[in-house]
Image 1 (spheres, rainbow, N blue to C red):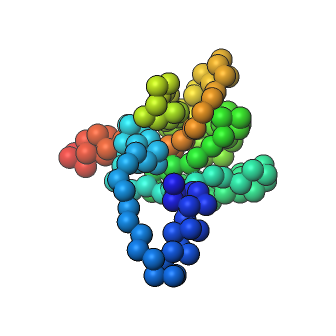
Image 2 (tube, rainbow, N blue to C red):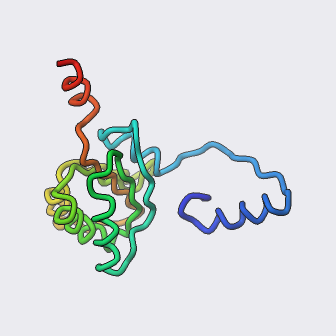
Length: 149
């Protein structure tokens, strides 16, 4: 719980006070979502939560557009459809993977273009933790094929 979570403040405080901090390996939704997304994994950026206000959120999406890296975003189940619609418009409908409730009983991964995934999600009630993985890049298979020519 040290990623995009107040736990990082506790860890920083412990380090400042020279208290030993030991990591314990375990599931990480950031890496689990990236790995299962089917999108390029060689370069990635963890964005965390986007700003809630529409103007600031769209400004940030414009800044992320065209990056040569896969982008990982945390999102609320209540805002994920709107965020996908914003990604569709702002980033020219890139490939995405919505990873929900990873490593839990109701785990679900939905892959496709941002607009198509948004439409699929409108047909259901989205619950639980959501990780959005976005890539404007070619898949690693397509990159290898392009480089071998």
